[in-house]
Image 1 (cartoon, rainbow, N blue to C red):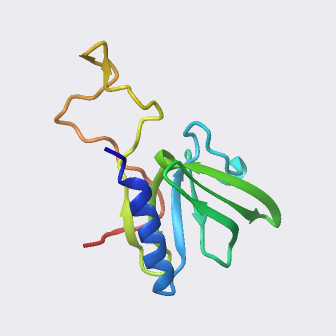
Image 2 (image 1 turned 30 degrees about the horizontal axis):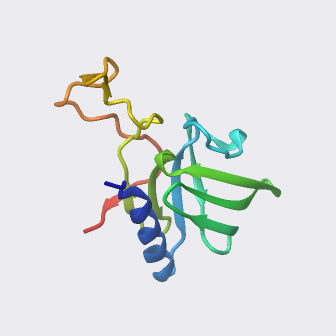
Length: 139
């Protein structure tokens, strides 16, 4: 079954914009294949303003979010794999959604039919991303 993350990201983006708010995306800047200006990342994370007025050529599909944006007045092309997106929310009120950390490897759950050594016990929750945004659950 396909991941629901890209569908949720697109839906929340549209919902935030339709409500005249500013969509921000929290990104794991250390995730493989992420292309963001590293000088603006902090603690392995970066918050990106992805409002229509702040970016050009925004493209969201099931694999990644890509666009052109300016940082310190310098244009950059950004590429964010879906697995690197830790959350999307409205800047004005913090409403949005956070996502569980995703492994950069597609099939790390089993090795030859056995559980991988790197997997946490099933009872434990993965660590939540830390950062500035204060998010609320959208129901």
